[in-house]
Amino acid sequence: MVVSVSSPADVVNLALVRIGFQMRIGNLYDGSKAAKKALDIYAQTRDELLRQDDWAFAERNISMSLLKQAPPGGYVSVGGWSPQYPSIPWVFEYTYPDDCLKVRAIKAEPVFIQEFNPQPVVYSVENDKFLTPPQKVILCNIPSAILTYTGQITDPTDWEANFVEALAAALGRRLAPALVGLDATKLAASDEAVSMKVAQTEQG
Image (cartoon, rainbow, N blue to C red; front, side, top):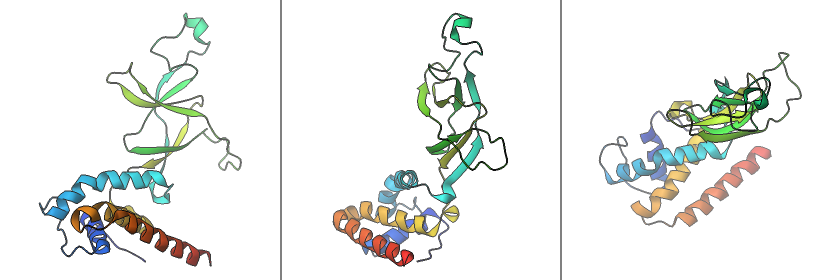
């Protein structure tokens, strides 16, 4: 089903329709019971769903911002490791983007315009307590690395229709017990059956 939404309230109202709640909200801050319950769970549910799949609309590719680099001659050449360098055994430390919900991949800068056989890159996400203030960072051994990640896309007009449907279903399962006393487990089973039917139809 193609769904057109332009605000968080539109998504919440879709969820309210799913669970048979009779009233609608004007916005997440209108003070109604439904709006208060939705406000408590909306952002968390949205971000959780964004993390679960590699949604095409949420993919972001950026050149990573370097914070630290190991000394060219190795740690022996400078008398050992110190906090000005990445943690061992990593060579490069990069900024973790503010809007990054999930790291999908780290890639080397392509030598050619098209790279037909990209190799997986090992990386680590850590908290660098030696920065002021401490912050989350990405460590790897690739210079001038490119980061592919899932961004925190908050504008509903940027979402795909199937994401809107999935979010409305997830919100409905969490709102139902508080608003209409429905069993969230039964709603989950119903949503799963609908999703399976849609998938079977798309596959022919």
